[in-house]
Image (cartoon, rainbow, N blue to C red):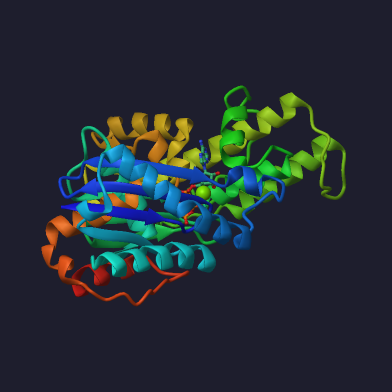
Length: 356
Ligand code: ATP
Ligand code: MG
Ligand code: FE
């Protein structure tokens, strides 16, 4: 069976084709980063309009790459949430109309389930069950993944998501948009020991995170370095100061994430740990996790670097896995386009069992 999947929850338009063996047959992706750059963040209205523009050409590109035509598809998958309402609606309207026209079933996919299952695209792929660290622009969660469609929340951020903390901190010290990757790059040449930033919740007994205090600590330090009493739009910082701030910030985030991952794995007893979401592309995090996990006899799995941030593959792939397990999803002929801008991942549990 072949699934054509669409992702449009935020600022990436992604289209991909996967089969129920979990193979990627074609993929196309457009990032709106350049469009939003001048605004320093994602502008929702621009995002929705751009998705509408890109969906069809990207679909054609993915089909051409796969050497397939629409008539070869068995199901249409689309991100139903969470995400920007207009952006989700653009993708959903396109996917549902297409499915209606072709009389194919629609498989709505939870965006975070897409992220969460993307480490299964690693070679070798982890077996179920595993413990997952999901760190993206909008979420920071630890999950127990018992099997496909059975997700248990172990802990989450009380304020900013990890990716959000990277982005906001980067913006604060004047790094170009999008901040996360820029901060990580500069951290490579900085001294991570120079500033002793707080490690929020490091010693708390639970598996929750908090990153907003850390962000404030960086701001206070940066202001001191720039000789300011009040934060301003542009802080005068030397290249060395910037790099050291980045490295020290990244060290703090990585230390907390790694510690919590190890506690989570100890709690679940899983010998497999996966990392998903955009921050999973962070090399320092990958290395630190690898080191700590191997000491504890735990294997770590990461999605391929290019599939950490949003993409269509993870949506087509998640739907294909579900379809392989529940062939009855092929009978679905409901085209009521339902999007869920806010949607807990545990809702995907229910969705998984009730949809069939
Ligand atoms: P969500 O999935 O929660 O809805 P999102 O889709 O916007 O949010 P992703 O696309 O998974 O998030 O990830 C984007 C985030 O990843 C951004 O915050 C970005 O800064 C961060 N990010 C990407 N690469 C890196 C990196 N190398 N180091 C740190 N952060 C990174
Ligand atoms: Mg994005
Ligand atoms: Fe995402």
